Each structure stands twice: as C-alpha cells, then as structure tokens.
Amino acid sequence: MRFASLGSGSKGNATVVAAADTLLMIDCGFSLRETTRRLERLGLAPQQLDAILVTHEHSDHSAGVAALSRKYQIPVYLTHGTASTGRCDPSFELRHFNCDEDFSIGAIAVTAVAVPHDAVEPCQYRLSCGNATLGVLTDLGSITPHVIEHFRACHGLLLEFNHDMPMLMAGAYPPPLKRRVAGDWGHLNNEQSAQLLQCVDRAQLRHLVVAHISEKNNHRDLVERALLSALDSLDNVVFAEQGEGFSWLELPSGLGV
Image 1 (cartoon, rainbow, N blue to C red):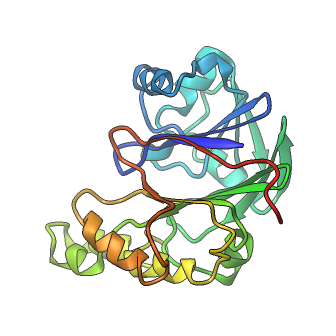
Image 2: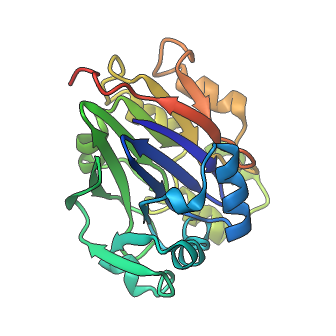
C-alpha cells in the first residue's frame, strides 16, 4: 500500500491511497482542473480512481467531489449525515454508511471512525491492505478514547497539527473563529497532536505525515518542537504542504501486526 497527497490545508485537501489494483481518493477540495493537474504530478489520471471517500461536508474537503465523480463516474462513499447536507448530491453515485462501519473497496479494507468536529456526521479513515495499516486523521477538535483505540496501531499516520495555541490567540482571527478552531469540535493544536502520538505504537509507525497546518496560526519550527516531545527524531516525518501535498510513501504489505 502507498499513499500521497494532492494538498493539505484550509484551501483544499485530497489524499490518494493505492493498493494492488485499487486506487482511492479521500476528500477532494480542489476544482476538477486543479485536481487533474495535481494527480498528474503523482503519475495518475482521474479515470483510474475506484472511489472517493468523503470525511465531512466542509468545502476544503468536499468542494470538488461532485464534479470529479460525475465526470469520471466514480462512486462516492460518505456518512448518512454528510450526505444529508447535499454538498455531494450532484455526484455520479452516493454510497452511504454509518460511522464506525467497516467495508471494503477492492483490495483496501476501510473503517470509518467517528470524530469530534463541527460537521453533521464527520469521520476519518483507517485503511488496511494485507498487514499494512494507514490512518488518516485530520479535522477533529479533541482526542477521544475512541480515536486512540482506532489509530493506535498504524504503520502510516497522516495527522493534523493545525495550530499553535498562542499564535491562534494572538492572531487576527475574530474571537468567534478563534473559539471555533480551538474548541473541542474544531481542530487539533500542536500539543494535542503530540499527546496523541504518545498514545500510539510509535515503534510500529513507519511514516508520520504532519497535515492540515494553518498557514496563519502555525509554524514549522513550533510543530517540530511539539513532535520532538513525543518522538526520538524526525527521521520518519513528512510535512504535507498546501501547494504540493507530498509524494508517494510506501507501506510494505509484509509489515508485522
């Protein structure tokens, strides 16, 4: 199994996961033209996609889903709550599920994990093929025992480090937006994400991707400082960029469980 990103941040998100003959995209917050351009950078074409998985209805994750699905006849998987918002209605085909449901798409086993975020029925995803497991965990405001349970044993983890709390509080966002971002249903700050890392099996973690970093309320140096409070080194850490995401990372199928 391998995975890559088209871009990560408040201006648009999309992650692709490939295993055997299956290719999935998690979220699509970019225009059809921009999505196609970014896929080409990874050596992919839209018509290769077997499915699009949606985490929630916010536009930086869903704005491009319907157009991509409709043009290339790609089924869209999403929770009943996300579907009820109508954001993805013009898609080619919608396939609904409940949070914490397990299902398979081709060679990839998927678990949709409920998370605390200010959307109708948001989820994040744990994906497996063979013994390799990938967690995609962004857009949540707090770390729950439920989240720890589902993401503690991943070989690859894409994890939100959205904001530095002092930067957010001192920044230009209006007070209601600051409260939303920092709240239990908003986004993870650097310290929260580092605390989650202390709860997972770090010896098993082959790739850690730092994702959904705020361009206004965070800085790489601050993220690295938080990471080093939980990790011995940054050797296996990759930063997902808004402009270019990150290139392919590999999780061999023979990894131990």
